[in-house]
Image (cartoon, rainbow, N blue to C red; front, side, top):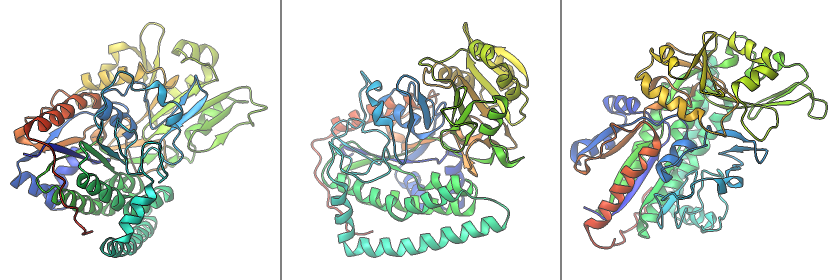
Length: 490
């Protein structure tokens, strides 16, 4: 057994989808790991919100408190915090992860939302979705140039670029002609992920193994981006799994018996219907209609109402799939449900009339407030509504934890989940962030002999001690890592 550990994070691939891919023969190398190397699929519950920054914080630090969404409004600093392009998390990072034990300390953390104590990220950071030199990282240009300087890599990349652009464009046109409306934004991101980022990240992982870093944690996002654009069940999205499987195989071959491999995901993804599909009215427009004179800003979307100078007040909306956070006003603290009703009774009344909103959650003065179907529930009384979901006690536990976050919205909204599809507040055909279906059910793929148990994991922060224990056990098994030869193949 090797002494070092490499963890590959496959964004958006739920446990059910992995098993379906295995049955369909889309992931032959993962099947090999199961059949020949004794790997098994360990399911776990990722918690709420079922989104990458929340889950990765849990896995890498063991603490994802106050990360309520992919984007949120920081009341204290009057700042919209977001990940992806133009990430602003670094402006609030000092608030987070105190007294934590980062998983990747002294190792490498590649294409992740957070540094996790790593000594190296090879200039590839999902935090920024760009390739610029970081204070504790080498310039990404050195990695890019080294990758492209290899004729085999360059030829492989150019060939795949042509194939990927053609395939994505063809599928986009076909989907539009069939009446589906893939999001152009996610189609473009998907192409970038496939053509360049995915290949470069894989190369950086091989480079990190060659240089003897341990542990190594690396994120791969092509499947999730494609799922957002086309839907997780679309044939193009499913075809990406072959690409993911190929990457896992290449990394596994580069181990040379010096590294042990874990593959995991952060959440699943489900088919979705945009909120505005029914009548063309976005949530922000609906809210603005209830709040004349107020400026309503969708933090990734449109703005409604008067300009900031002439507005009576401001309401901000941040979306993550079927989850929406509503921030009322410019106060430095989170409002209680009673505060919101007292100041804006029409807003709450009109939201409750929307059949596209399944559940509204807020912090009451004495307990958690839930409203569903026009009925208000306090605390555990909402379990009556959750009875239709798998393990409602766990869903209730996850909801109340999210509602305890000071950074959460004054009102928290969940889109209706019906017939395996969820109302999505973003313009996506596939999504995650809320609860229902596969979005809350990821996996850890690990060897049976390691005796990993995720049956008790109801939130991603509970994965951290499991992986940290495995990392430490492997480190004690044998002596120092001997650098393996770096393969030159694509």
